[in-house]
Length: 219
Image (cartoon, rainbow, N blue to C red; front, side):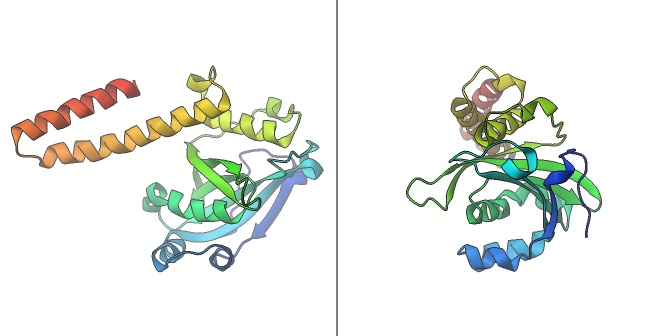
């Protein structure tokens, strides 16, 4: 399973290629048997493949972001991709630094994910995950390295995930908007399944109106 990503073209100085046993997360984070089973069932292997820090990319750390890690997660089956965020959340909660996840099935990179996370002001070692952002193609721009510190560097990566439609918004506002639209998309999937099964015409009409309003907002 030692399949290391090389599509992101991070400098050689950042490479780690360190295997992380799944059991190490069981010890750091309290998780129930269902979540533990997801770890075992979904994931074949976990590797830290890059460490982006002041020592490896010569960008100074900040109080909020001391370093950024790149994790390679090899999934056992592509069907687990839709459910993987529950597992990534456990990893993110156990590590205070931002993590860029490279998700792999077989020998193919299929998706990149990153959480917009902030330090918990009460428990400094913990982070609060706001939302997960996803990309199928990750085109890392060298201009990103022109950053005053790692917090700005991290926010530039988040903006790559957000895309051009959010470019005029402040980072916090952009993330909240992305989070809201992501939730709307989930709601839409539930409603579209519900309307197919609904037999009563008045209830079907109300569902149709909800679906129409959501689709209008998502345009």
